[in-house]
Amino acid sequence: MKNRIALWPMLLAVAVSSACTAADTTTSPNVMAASAPASASKAPHAAVQVLLDEAVPQDWLVRVLAPLSASVRVDEETGGVISIPATGATLTIPAGAVHESTVITMTALPGSLVAFDYSPAGTKFKKPLNMQVDLGLTNWNGQPFSVVYFKSNDDIDEKRHKIKISEVLPVTVVGRTANYDLWHFSGYALSSSRR
Image (tube, rainbow, N blue to C red; front, side, top):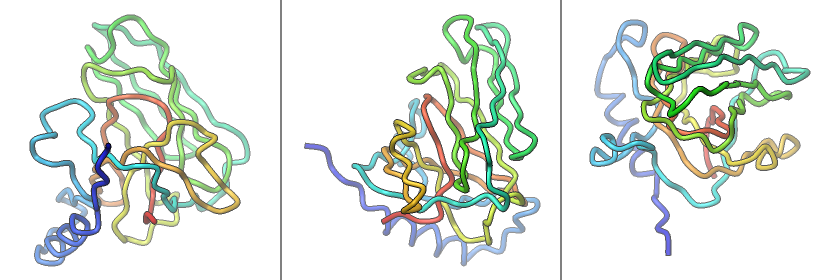
């Protein structure tokens, strides 16, 4: 039987430690969500595992009317960068991250939720990919948030403003840019809270 990890104690610890430090977020990274346990940080997929939980996603300031996609071909020796300027999103794929020549695609999903789909779905990486999102294009108000992984676009319920999630990832915010690492693909969203 899988164990459910309670994130409230970790989020409280992050909030208390954030309140006790006077770091300037324009020059110092600020962890905005529960980090993975130290023992997990050395392994791929260093994320906090959860069971069929739901997240309340962040919103775009301007609704994405249609899927916005960009792609790049990478191989073991050559990395690449994908950007979708309208969303302020940039995905950096380092050299050596993939096992063979692969076309990587990032899609900003249509709607008001800050959510991205990546393909090929199910791809696992030898090195983490780095994702950056300009929070100035979202409704982020400076409060802590998480990056959440969802397995399928069917897990998004735009009407209820919820996403069924499988993982919660650590995110760092510098200035107004969210920065997080991806070890595998399907979908990821910025989430202001979980229930």
